[in-house]
Image (tube, rainbow, N blue to C red; front, side, top):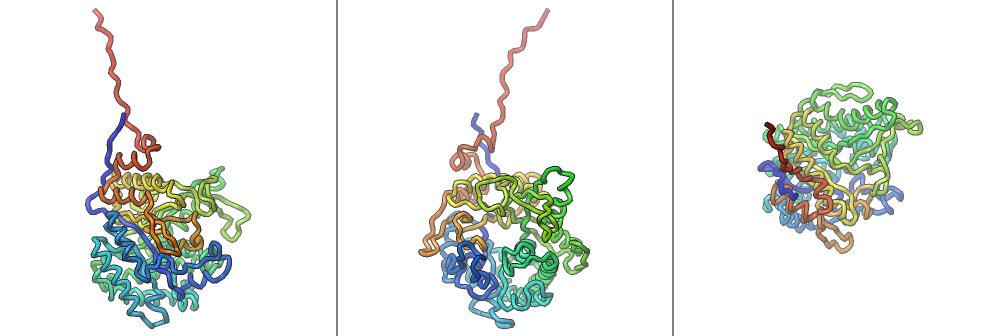
Length: 458
């Protein structure tokens, strides 16, 4: 039996894509990532961001046209601190006007801008004073935020203070995959603490200038699968869940940051108007005696999959519901999926992943969790941090040739455009884009068979 259905989303739901300045703008040689890229071994095949997607030279205009043609009604992007304040205390009006132009272009195309103020990159002069290990960076960041909001705040309703602070801290200071390449647990905690203070300072600065502004941050959450035997590995799972997934969020509600010790940060309490969820993978977690620098805790992909490097984890779109549930219940704040996508070189997996992910979001909404929007990662293939331009790490709805800058839409772009236009996921979409799994994803309802009752006796 064929079943027709429509998974409808609330009126006013935001549909869009997310991007980050360093990954798409190009032509940047003044931040910590551009410096990091110069050392062999840091980036896939020793690549550099180069011109990336060439947004700094105006290619964002045509990409915004593509997003509008796909019926996006919102877009998340970041401003690059190193462009706006290339030297300590010296600000670039040219850079400010560039971002003002981006906001104007989005508004002209009917898209709501969600502006991220810090997305992994720092000016070189901040890096030279110790980056976020230095408490002085909090004050410098607050000054930068004030300037941006004073200049652009009249045209922006939604601000994201910091993208994935725990990723920034762990990848740069515990695992050494991001700049500055440290492997020090104490520094990891210090960076997370100072980024929490930075968020709080930014929140209060924005609200002082524009009280009606909506301010949140983007939190990367990972789903965790417990190794066996459970009794042995449960403490490791709980440690990772608390430290990576929960401690930063809890601190924004209570004003207390709890890692190995409790730190009182009262100014951070109640500094959320909304919360963003970035979600990609699930990891198997447990103890490993060979990992002393990580408190003998290891997380890895549960089993060999199709994505190659073990660091990426298991694809499990249904984990979105699990993370929405915890964030929704714990914060009681409006929630946006600020990043969600899958690395897929030939676009064969992405349509299925998209359908399963958006179905999970719809399910959460039907449990009355306040999800208000979904931002797909990402609009165009870009410079994917340590993975550079590795074909295995292409996340875009459009492919980009980094030499010719030619864009080519993928099948998943068309699917996402239909979802955005309809504000719904329908049976027809599923059958056309992932027909082989339509019945598995949305099984038909069993039909009651007619029963012939025996004749009455007597």
